[in-house]
Amino acid sequence: MDGRATVWFTGLPGAGKTTIATTLLGLLGPDSSWPVMLDGDVLREGLNADLSYSEADRVENVRRVGEVALLLSRAGHLTLVPVIAPFAAGRAAARKRHSIHGVPFVEVHVSTPLAVCEERDPKGMYAQARRGELRAFTGVSSPYEQPESPELVLDTTGLTPEECAKQVLTVLDALGILGAGGR
Image (cartoon, rainbow, N blue to C red; front, side, top):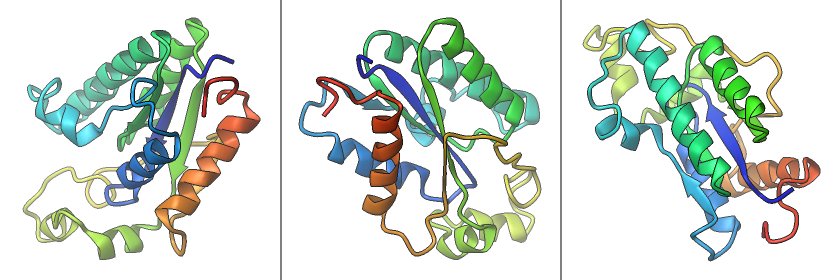
């Protein structure tokens, strides 16, 4: 393999998706031209700023993110995508698009329990959702459909971000994605 692939981190808000992806980016080495990260929060500020959090717009958000990831991966990047992506159909569609183009799609379910995510609550959004100030908040008032067969399931409880990122590296190695030039 040539290192091009998409690593799709999905899970509840506060599960640790971005932290693990950022840590993985650091472990991959100083060559910043190869691995890239498409952070869901950053994409919501720009590319997807026109989208709300309605179910239809969440579906469109995931579709757009999947297409950008595919473009980058087809161009030779290892694309790290930490996004909630709450619906199984959206993740399956992104996987299918990658498959059509012969680009590996590695789904990592960051399966941190809801109680742990709420305890972390880095943005205070769970507390707002519990008070009824946020509608359709994933894990509280909007569903999160867990992946049925991801390449890796990570429960971050009791693990450091580095330990989690190393587990992702192990999977990427096993799949042959980090071959020559990968690290």
